[in-house]
Image (cartoon, rainbow, N blue to C red):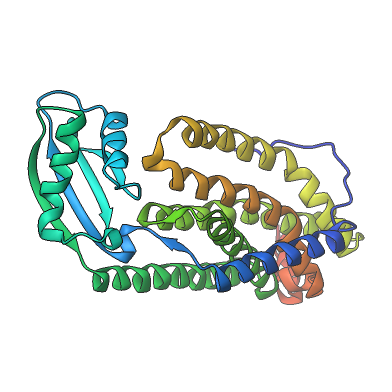
Length: 313
């Protein structure tokens, strides 16, 4: 599939210094918020009580949420469970009520606003399980970044690989910073969104790197800055079109998808916006900072072999 060509001639390299300042400020704010305010971990990580309720007909989730709010369970997550007549209610362990009696209290709250509900099960998720999920989630992100670093080193060069990994860390830290600043719950769905952001951001960066490598072969007399500028401009239309359509879908999920996927959509939305920005300004700019050139991507031995092959033909 051919890339969509762009006729733009924007001096992205010239704007790199300004972009570095913007990124540094945003990263500083994000890191400060993570260090001071930390993340608001959801029940998946902190532990809590999970209540499974069955209705004789399709359950109205808004009525369930209102009934729980009136009973003092304002920090709750309500979602369908398998079918429209089954409801899963997650309550934090800090609600001040014993797990053994939470089910009865929840049913009493629901009976006051709705009818016909029956309690199916009550499960307690301990904080030890939550800590294990936090550790495994952090390791999953770390292993993913390491795997990406190795992949880009073998496919391109360590100078481009370093730029790609720094761009990925840039995207993840800013996304986490937004969740820390807004105090949105950080749960397993958000962690899954972060892993998706890594893949999306890397894909955008790889497209730019492929074009940089092609242009280093074609534009022999051009400087590295001219090659990078031309490459980013040539892939700009493709990058904006892909990101734009994805962002429109995520906006629909964010505003219309309901509270169950609110955090998931928010993480993807922030991550894709920052990923598009980093693939244009951060990754390539860092490669230029490491003095990337044609000899890095095409060593003299490789070029000599290509010339010899052409002569024999």
